[in-house]
Amino acid sequence: MSAKAEERHLAEVISSVGRRSEDIRFALLLTYITLGWMTIEGAASLLLGWASKSLLLEAFGIDSVIELFSAAVLLWRLRVEASGTATSEHVDLVEDRAARLVGYSLYALAAYVVLNSGYGLFIAERITDTHESVWGILIGAVAKVGMPILAGYKLKVAARLNSRALRADAVESITCGYLSIVLMIGLAATRLLDWWWLDSVAALALIPFLIKEAQEAISGECDCGKT
Image (cartoon, rainbow, N blue to C red; front, side):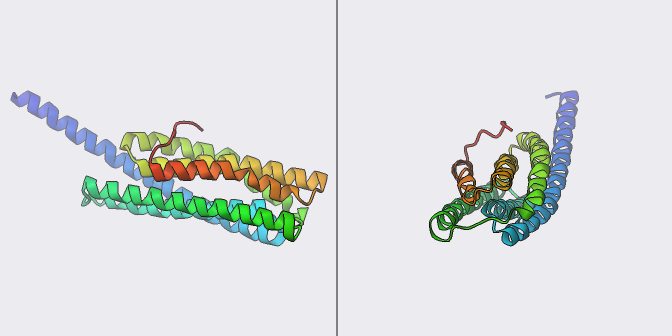
């Protein structure tokens, strides 16, 4: 290899390292945004869900807590690489552990929704107080607009970094956008039609999303390009 060729190769390596460092910093920024967003969204959904006895809002809040957990694990993974001391094997191990933990947590959320829906339908006839529905619908609307945008940026950076952990976290954001639609429809219909059972039934619509996402997170195979 000539001296000029070596110089070009060195310049390309330096440029590649620089671009990856920029992508890591941008991924960290997206993760911090997710952490702040999920903290506010989760707290508001859980408080409103508890006050109104809305399983939909409670499930949405718990999903936000799971996303918060996912973002926290991802933050650890990104900081490890940003430090410049991690081997590729260690990064892969962190990503695999993060994806599996999130997957199992989603299975737990699916079980929670099924049990509470059954309890509300067949045992306690859990009646939702629709007084808080407007605020719940507002939370869902914000998530529906913002989450796909946030997920889109995550997917682009994940592709450049070849990061399965970041892709899995992006799928969390995509799913949150889907769940927000279920949340808005369920709360609006319950408020307008005054069907006490509708909240519990609508919550069951979350199950296919949760199980699919859990399976993909654990297996490491996901179609992350769809929003």
